[in-house]
Length: 272
Image (tube, rainbow, N blue to C red; front, top):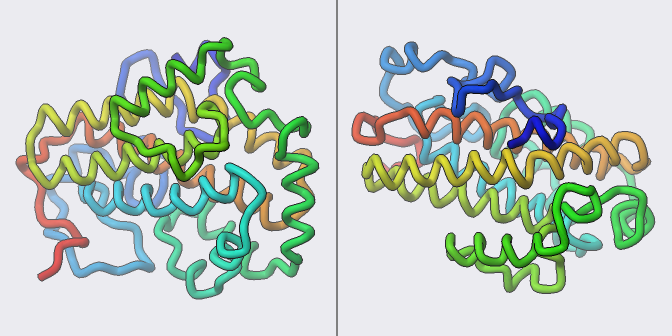
């Protein structure tokens, strides 16, 4: 489990008991106790500037998946122009899907950053790229054996995760694992719409287990490396965005594994 590999300092703490209630330090309204959720009102209209209700698994999973699609491309390889435009776009930053303190602070830092694409790419190549000082794969971080990619390949196939967009990146690379966590969060949101309890619980377990055993320990090392090695505001802010995504993903999995999708009210993502 996660503690044996060193608890990531960017994630809410686990206890010996699997799947505790929502953590006190998680994002937005996630810190609400499960006993309070029954008293919450029916969802209001979609508001991109506010966190969704903690019981709105569909919106929360969709938001995590959206964030993961951006962050995976920022971490997987030297960022392309389109990716850099996205994380420098004031309107996109204003509407960043996760509304926790880490994510909002990162958005503020990115909006104030004044860096060229060359500066950002050079730092990626020197610090985050192959042979750089920050371990970007589970094997480089000493978290997995040489057969890690074969195991992950089987896991990705089991969950129908398309790796074609990241085909030149090792399967145990943090960029791929971010994308897969987003895939699992999106699958959880889709399962929640079916209201089938067994399928939803399995999806929540899959997300939580992957965070515990793969992305969580690896991302903790990447985030620490960025804090100590990176100089650009872009990648220092990216570490905060990844922190926010991890916290929300953990809290989402923790909540969904206990909750009854059959009792769910409408989602803010529903079109009325």
